[in-house]
Length: 536
Image 1 (cartoon, rainbow, N blue to C red):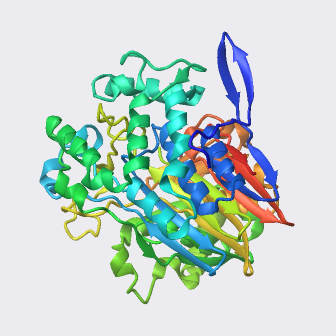
Image 2: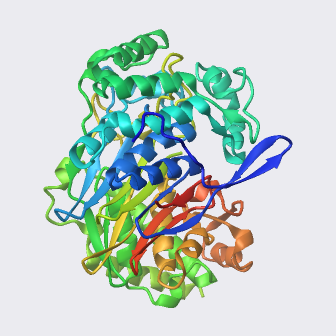
Image 3: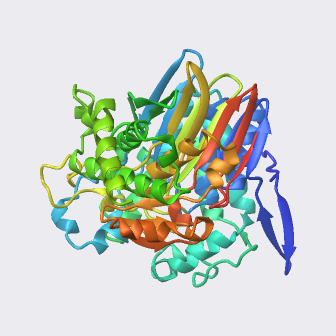
């Protein structure tokens, strides 16, 4: 790949008042591989990597770096990355646990006030994204880090058009951004959001990425970039120091969790991710009559809301340290028999009452990657290094601060709890689909609903269809204007509270799906964000 790879965005561009409004390609087909991401520029970067002979890991890493440029509110070098990888040869499926780490000096007592976990330099865990992407590329890719980083460097230097979603998120977090070092980097003149269609450039981030390309990712943890992070943290009362970074948070290869659902084999992310929750939902739904598994009917919506709530109750009550989980023989949450019993209780109840981001890649060599990366909340900690160009995460908010026996209680060097569930699906032994979503606790329900719909709907329709989500307190969010108007009332009669969300709600996840059938790759990017799909 040339040092100055041209990025060609395969989208329609509408001129509006002199500004470019990009309409992404939401669904695509190819015989030679497929990429689906939450931003059209990142999709095009991944597509080009496949086109020049890179494999799915090469394309996933390149697209992940590009998402850090064009989706800075959701991810970037200052966050953490989880990957689920299937290798065609040798045939193997495994998870890369790329958990970040709490700083050595962090204690739970420092974060009794919740705002300290959410905003500012102290809210940040040791970023793992550079280490994870570098490891995946070295171990399972075919291209150099410099080669796959070059398109993102160009994207940061030359810029890209600001979408309506990016503008809205910046306006939502405007107060926090204006009062932090992130303001000059992510706001026009440091005071106002970039307008829709204007070009957003990040020369400081481009400089950091170019240094990583030349010096290697080790520089982020033990070189000049590490020293810059250390100085920046000291200046702003952060906790990360050079010794934290020097203990590079290398990813851990873990065995995924799995289940069978409707003739499919589902493989998904183990603890500290939320794959157990996804498996439990599918195990329950496997024992529910087909007519009650769709949210398009009132009774189906009630069943799905109850299934989601039951699975999240179990996740809250049965947290596992990932290392300990590997040694557990009886895993109740992922047991098919437990799913059958819960399904029976759910049906009795029904009858009695009438900014995280994700990308999916497949290549022509039989490899697949589901990659979910995040800086936790939208715009993370709203803190950034003025000389580095990227936002720090606020994963200090993802620990438990009440129960000292909890496996995710905040301790020095502890890994935070995660909601990610990148998922790979097989039909028999044949690789069929890879999908995942951002959205915190909405991730697994979003994936479940797409899997349910794929039984009887084309891929794009399954992804774009209206969704629901149920919180532990019984609050059901739904895209009500796209659903039957009697569904909210039926939910209320069953004891749920209802919160109506916008159509194609940002809140309800953003599934990126790639399927392979009849020698053709089909990619779908969720219309709820700025994504696109494309193949070489």
